[in-house]
Length: 112
Image: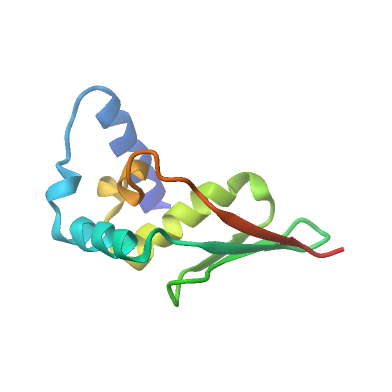
């Protein structure tokens, strides 16, 4: 809960011009290099008939998350990536996870 509050406050601070210099943090640099070297992080999302879902990275072992509805999937997946790389919530900025114009690819399985 505290991390979510810190994340939201940092996002608001960015909107008023506060710069946290995320790009210069060594943890962020390691994350960006890893993502670049892999050509991105791919996920498989499995959805149960009751709406529960689970997402697991297919090219990085250990990144897995889930939820009760797909509306929060993007936020949960981003949080899982930042957590995996040890990025503190005030440095979490969505644009750090991919290069400009890089496409997002998802594989989704729905179970009936």
